[in-house]
Length: 130
Image (cartoon, rainbow, N blue to C red):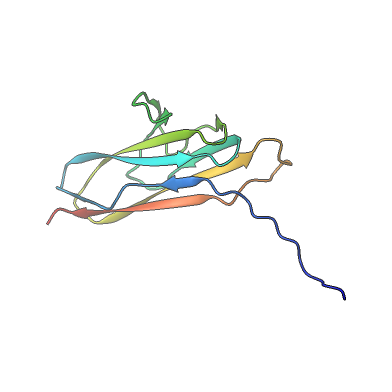
């Protein structure tokens, strides 16, 4: 009796989540908080192409201490499996509903050149206050 099939490998996916949808007053500011938990050791990079995102505040261990980058993309951060990193995204709400996405791209330590886990994107809707 023989069995044939395809052997697959389940890649560990890191936990990447964002805040609930937000209702804001026109002209108000808010800081959206995203949380990343590494499932493996390697490097992670966060990015957002949304025009409302002028900077990303990176907070290792979600301690409240942040480093800021004046663009919608962070440098690659070295992370170890199980580590938490928070990304804070300050925005100024102009009054028109929008959706802000932030993507986490992870490259495993020791992975071949060019290999990375599939990018993970979290989207938060920003809506006018009722």
